Image 1 (cartoon, one colour):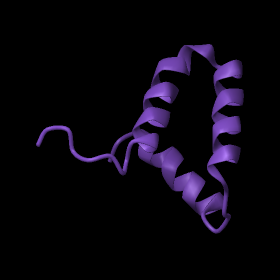
Image 2 (cartoon, one colour):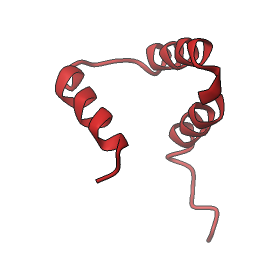
Image 3 (tube, rainbow, N blue to C red):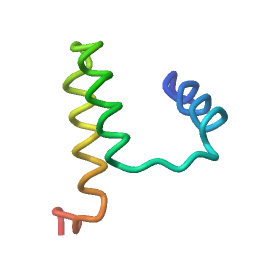
Image 4 (tube, rainbow, N blue to C red):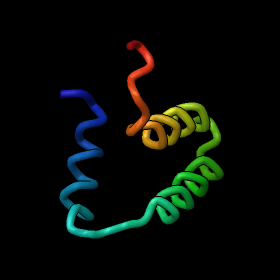
Length: 60
């Protein structure tokens, strides 16, 4: 188990039944980066990864 799994498990436990839009998620990520600028790169990487989930595998 990675250390981050604890946060993910807490998120799922506390808010797992909620439905959110990607618009809402994007706004929360922007707010988080505004408050925690040191996390700009990891948040950008996560957002890009989420945005490209349906893209075809580029290794083929």
